[in-house]
Length: 210
Image (cartoon, rainbow, N blue to C red; front, side, top):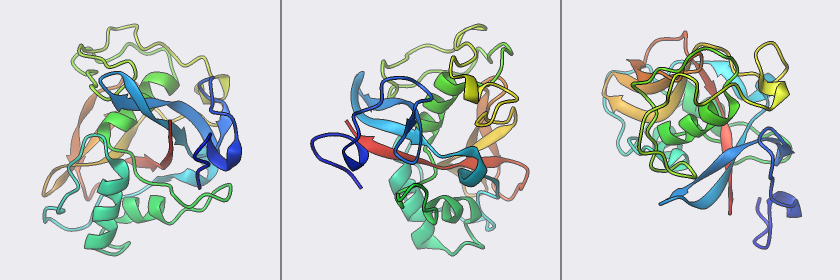
């Protein structure tokens, strides 16, 4: 639910990474050519995070290949099969948290924004990963060993209540018929994993128009 003149339920737009907002926590902005189009809100760890398969079939998912449109990727998966076929997408899609029901599985560039702004630890970054045309500001180059640094949002630092785990998180961006794209939250490494693997996590997000 959006208030056209402002944020969710009329709240002022968030300004501080990790700030409680819109049923979750402010994770940053996404946009086009460094101009913000949406605020990203990550759901609470206790209710919006789970270990789920990306899918349980070896067929391509029509439409679920956007690097930025997580809502559409999620909708495409939900339309293509039930929760047995697409466990992670249905988990996110079915959430109702803080009165909001528009949660979804983040696309790879949205997941990257969550990593950059909410990185839980001080581990050196994977310097072969990191470019993101949809970040605000946009990033053409890869991470350096020390940038991004551990998040300044204390609740998201390792050991605290909202911290991402150091393992792999699924994005909603399909790699191919048998693999989904993922980011490892210990060091930002991007890659893909077998969609049937149950050891990766998913954490739902929602958008608020800027």
